[in-house]
Length: 356
Image 1 (tube, rainbow, N blue to C red):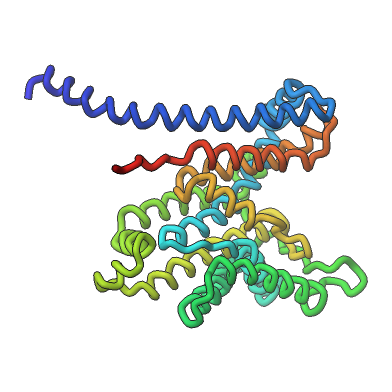
Image 2: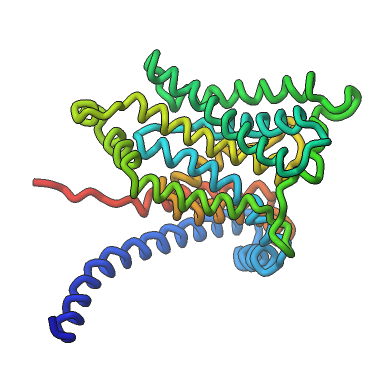
């Protein structure tokens, strides 16, 4: 093939790609613009200047080292929690139990650290916490899988209800057997320094971020490049057709939920060993639900999950700036978050072509 022919062929292949990408980008920009405009109207109604508010958020959140590092710290468990939703979603399952699975991951990690005590080496404690946290998260998700396979209980309902059971178990532990002091606040003793997650040199960002990004790559490869990933996609698309093709659908359902629970449990371990260092009543508050929203914002795709988790973490960190610079309550950032979700999910959905 001549050079001219190769160039012409490349141009032909490029045009369809551009034709697909440009409308997608345009829809995203349009959706985000709509969300910002609507939030600006709300700010005006509250007597705040939208330009001042957005400028303050940009300058105090993204142009300063400490808030930017805090974004990456908060982003880390969100990535893993969202991946915990994405894997079962590929099998057609809805895992709303990230909150409980993250709590159980924290419980497993704390239990391992308390069992080993202060005399074990940091590496041994860290390794034990990772294993115990992933097992605890997987077993908690496995309860929902068992109810789905044995009793036909929808996993969206069972995983959601198990969140409250996990919280009750956490409260029991910090009020009774694991409480550090009978007279102090209900919480466990702080994790020893040698067992805390190391941080990236020169920052306050723990190494969990590297692990989360690495696992996003692993999940992408597993879902798109392995037989197991293909099988759960088939089962998620049409379970009956998968059964007739000889696939063991119950095993695929169980494995997808177990892996999702393990990822959420690991998020709980990172929150425990890299952020909070002890269990308390508010441990991992709302992480699971925010992760669920981040996964839906990214449409269950591993790499977009990284972006969605960053956005949610940035919105959380910017709430203080909104209160200080615009004079509106910090909780107003939740309104902007909701508007972004509604706009993006509503305006970027691919429309199915009508068939004759």
